[in-house]
Amino acid sequence: MKYSRYCNRIDKPTLGGRPVDLPGVSVDHDGVAVCCSEIVELLQGGAFTTKQRALIQHDEMRVFDRLTPDFSYHCTETPVRDGAIGDSAAAVFRFLVRLPDVPKIVFRERLLGEHARVARAVVDRLGAVTRYTHNTPLHRPLPFFPFDAISECWYATADDAAPFTRDLVAEL
Image (cartoon, rainbow, N blue to C red; front, side):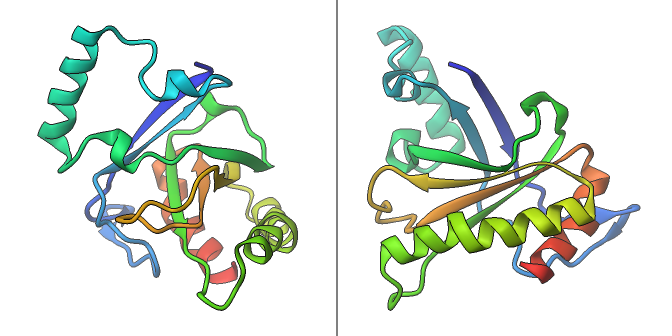
């Protein structure tokens, strides 16, 4: 596996110790794990023994209402700003849903084309973003989590994340 990063939800985002409103940012989910591998079986637990997998499943059910394979997205990552994975301390994930009248292929082409160009310009101008990527699933959206793409926006510090996320969301 190339890398694995775990991100926890921030229930009440703050900036300088004061609550901050980030339009469009949800705190409904517990967190996100981002793993990268050229071998899909590693992402599906293929490196664990039966005993190790049983321990992991026990822990997953302690934290979530279902096992992670039931809500895992296997994606192709398309970097917009390809910063080093280890250079970031905070991230905002945007789970994107296409409008019903937009065909999947049109949504994907716009996300990876026009939207990526706009995002690159905004990210370059704002300067605080260390890594920004688009992830498009390799399978149909899952029934309980019907997302068509996921964007990751990484920052060097949590203090950078709040003001720049507000600006980024406003511009994108």
